[in-house]
Image (tube, rainbow, N blue to C red; front, side, top):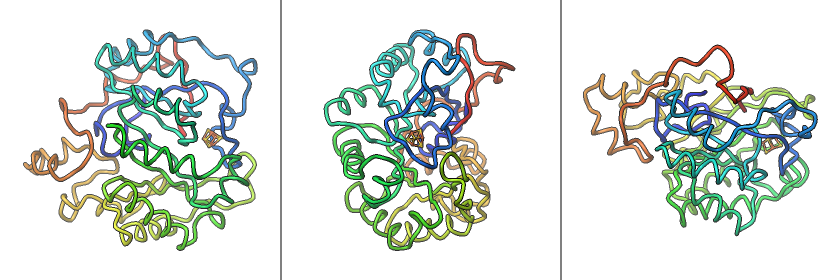
Length: 303
Ligand code: SF4
């Protein structure tokens, strides 16, 4: 069970809990994968519990989660299962979230996103060279998925860009990427610049300095992005990400929109000013996280 902001999604049911789960394997082979023990494992190598779609939906409901997230590895590889889980979740009023690299063909893309309410798509870089050499995938299908989600679905979309020193952190690349987002998806799609930590086959690259993320965020704002965030670090500039919260002094590390604005007495103002899915009853972090994995489900670490 995670805060929804950890996916990261800052404009979707803020302040609520999400039940996260994944399977094994992945359709990409990112050299920096921070979930490599999951994404590179074979099913036989792991002791994984079974969970029916109905069980996942029921557990989410019982724990007080407002949504279920397909995460840790890419839901593209367990698409049929994810669709069944999404349908079961909708049956009991639980929203669905995809955390994905967006590398998927056209037809399955349509099938998958029919039952998804929000997505965080990892735009890993803005060059074909990076995608081919570092991830084993290609850039254009990911861009196609982003355009599809924005223009042909009602899925709430946010983007994550993991900034890796010396590989995708040039001003030129970040400017090009954010300008493309503004031009093709509009200025209201939030972007999260997150910090890389050495892992898997990329242990020779240093962690991302916080200043690099702040700099990337400033480039994005200059390009016209309205909601640019930094992640995996403590960033003193984060308080300025919500223009409607003037000065931002009341913004906690993770957005709790309801609480923040109620304290300021301007709930309706925030909900008008911020794009995203902010409706519904006040958020909450659900029931206390149980000491062990929820019945029938195992707990894994977050991406
Ligand atoms: S970083 Fe994500 S998309 Fe890449 S291999 Fe790991 S799980 Fe798959």
